Length: 256
Image (cartoon, rainbow, N blue to C red; front, side, top):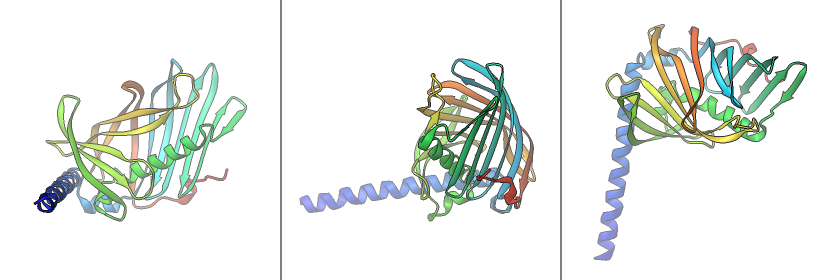
């Protein structure tokens, strides 16, 4: 009897897991259609954009401008220009496969990978999340494992959640999709931020995607609000968005 009960328990757990996987797959498939369909998403595996916004660092509210480029699955480049304490500050981050480089220029001083290994891992996670936001790779079992998680309230509307476990990368993360539209409205993960003293710290990072506009038939979020531990860290407004079939590798230089 005990063996039979154990077998039943295993069967129930297995059935629950399968249901969760099926539910997650259904959420992703709806999102793919909402974001322009698999053919469109698979066609444009690279992109570029410009940005402006503000961020909070060590109690200072900094306005910034910048640009971003990516090429799936493992190319990523971010450049941000701002002023801090009356000095020009430039942040330049590049990921090319396993090679990661981050530099901060403050006045005449240049710091390389100032956040150490934690910052390197965070940039690798950003690259993996960029691929996940392409949506179609989420259905590739060789790239990701996705399971359903609890629904959430995102800006007053119900959103379906999935837990994403990348095959490449150490961190899992969650993605939430509006239940009505199917559009991506939030991502969450345990990340790395500047910290209140500027020394770097682990944070719960929530990113809210909104203000969608179509580019080449693909709805793209043009506004991103990022919270660290429940407090606003950054607001980003994106423009000049290009979705590209490919991008010159010269956009991604990690050796300079």
